[in-house]
Image (cartoon, rainbow, N blue to C red; front, side):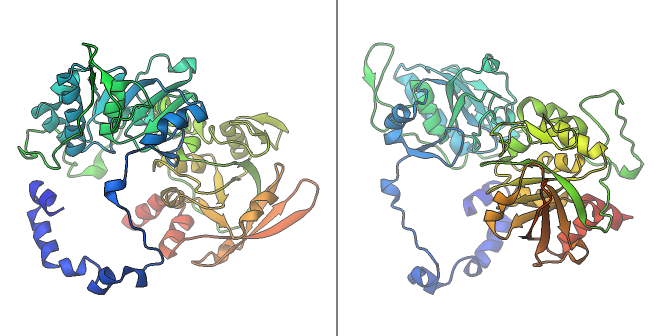
Length: 485
């Protein structure tokens, strides 16, 4: 870290850290006897640790590379790799790029060609510039590598992948950290696997998911078996980070309050963002259940990326993708829920809007780690726009929970997780005692069933005093506006 800080022009930070290093580490007795200070002690022998490949459809499913051939057969996964992708915001440092380039350079020297399409997304404009300066792009081009813009791009499905609309079963491998169904290209049958940039590069050259570069050989253009060498790279660029950059930065206007933003009223991609309403001081009563989500519900299920992101400046339009990927507990289908006003089944956004136009707020119920995945604000702004006032789940992904709080939505978790089973399809739900809303105090939930019976359960929350003010003000942004007047 000290080397990195100095190399990036922040030597004063490195010096300050060095002067206070005794306060930035554990005490000596902790290092001597860690078992006395930690609940669990895990020892990892790095010399025995082999590369892993994660996926498909979740980063939680991890397979040692030596076991991938068996996993492919046992699970019926496609073995042919159509595309290998490295970079984006994750695994796209100078070291990552240089190590991947060393694999390509070795392959070219050994007369190997890439059996799969190969794309490279630098992690920043600076990484792009110095990677090009140091010749890595030229190396990638030798096996047909395509350099993408240093942006989210293919990680969130914003790339032109011909044929994805056909829905064919296929496999891709990338170094991005998200691989949920339909995320990469909108195709639910794309099996996306995750690995390090150098492993992705090696497998892209082989064109086969079961290839193990640690043990397996490949036939080159002369028909000779060759083996890829272990990748090598630089943690810091030998020529330094310095290069001419056009980072697009523009200084803010001196009198910014006097500026007006003009938006075409007919635009379907841009829309003025209006403040959300403040809390009216009353309990949330008669909220119809919008959806009871079953199983994993990530931010990709809540607010899909890909082609939808062209509407990210138009909250009303992008809200038409709200929860369309979530599985309805009651029919095991996606984007098909009961409209309690009509007793018909419709899409989640349509039903939510119907409730909103009828003056009703609604509630969403979910399971564990609700909101896992990319920390996109739209996954919290959309329900707020659609008048979803409460999200009640078994547990939250931390960032999504905070995003919901910032938008003025009441983010609650079951005190008793088994109470999730009490929620029925025709329920209306009351959230009581909000006038006494305070840190560490549980909230009473009344579940009213269509047969006239009801259940009362308790929910908990993690709001502190400042976050409760966000809720009362209607959003964190509302509170900022008020404080700046």
